[in-house]
Length: 428
Image (tube, rainbow, N blue to C red):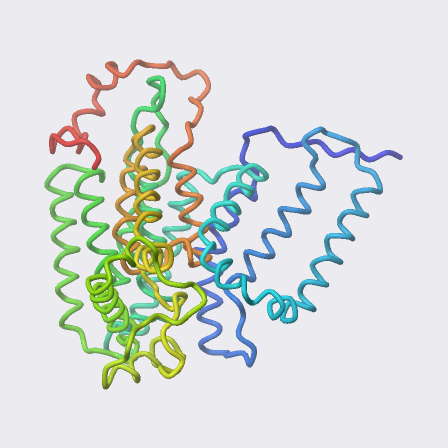
């Protein structure tokens, strides 16, 4: 009996397409909670789930060939060779890292490229998650943030920066991506109107989740996005903005916790880096060596905060991977040219198909990149990469739906509540 596997329809998303979002939005926060109450002697690498997903993608690509070739014994041989290779790498990983240690710092700083490549390969293998997927898992994460805030506030009588489910700024970044996906769709290339997706309850939970994180940068970005591109009337969007600004003020009145050291370290790194650039402007062009510690000196009293925030001794110095701010890390490592070029390329790509999703995503990348690792963090990096490709994609029109011109929609009822028209502004 001859077996044959059929290749899924090209361009169609499979059921596994939103699986990375389930890992980033739900699985990773729940595992973080378990690690708090059941700590392990051996820390689990945050890259592990994504390595497993990459392995699933490789096996799936072997199984479903684009040519539709019949399934032969060669498939089992290829899978066996792949598993053997993975076993060898895992078993001898420490020796390989030791022998290639001179290249390790460079590879670590190329993590954003690796994340984007992973997203691209996942999309061409399983398909692209849609807006509804981002909103669904964003709603679940928002519910987790609400529960976590209620429980921790009752125990600590405050809101820690590092919660049981993760860092508040990274959680806010994930929810902001879902907020961008929940924005009302606009006109697509060729005048095709993109169908709306998602449910109001998901959007409501996303907003509540962002409020529950109490991330100052996240609240600021959410207010900016919702005011300029959000749903509802001008009055509703203004009220939401004021509520987020009020919550930012509340964060300064809350009792401080030990996890507050993370914020102080971020502020200190920004201040010392700016001072470093002022004293030696050439560093803005060349950057610092990737293999050496940063030329920063710890003032009295900072060593304790550094050790509490990073878990490493101040005597070992500050290194580039310990800089959490994405844009600051790029400038320190590669100079000003690369981050500037990234922003220009990002703006040009999103402007070619300007939408509220793309405009909101640009705001998220610009603002959150000042405090969070973005593409250097595996969960946030994968979610950001998928959102970026979603913003660049051109969805096909629904079947039996009339293709209208651009002027048709400008005179339709959808334009009555268009926030861009009401505020007389274009995105960005």
